[in-house]
Image 1 (cartoon, rainbow, N blue to C red):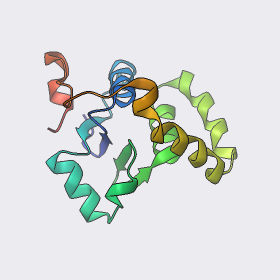
Image 2: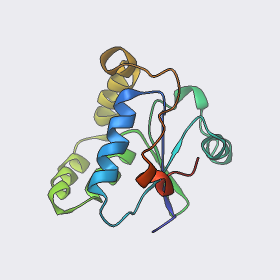
Image 3: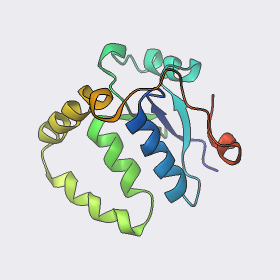
Length: 133
């Protein structure tokens, strides 16, 4: 397992949890580990990389000591899963400002559209080793 790819996510968000569950299923090589942003490791990363905690709306990717956020993180995660998802590289030609606008709109409304949990979800027993906290 490569410990240099960590996805930090909003553990209270139903959409984010669904995305994490999809990644777990699709990530046959177990490239990614997971941690809620609100957890200890997530908050350490926010501080270390001087991210604006108020503007973190769902996913952060830490890969090889480099941080990706918003659409950059989502595209990198999706395209690294398997050959089928390589088609998403097409999004790299779309201006980042436009992709982030769409990302921000979805992130801002994610609780309204997908709901919110009262607490972080607990991973299935067989997936516990993939979670940092």
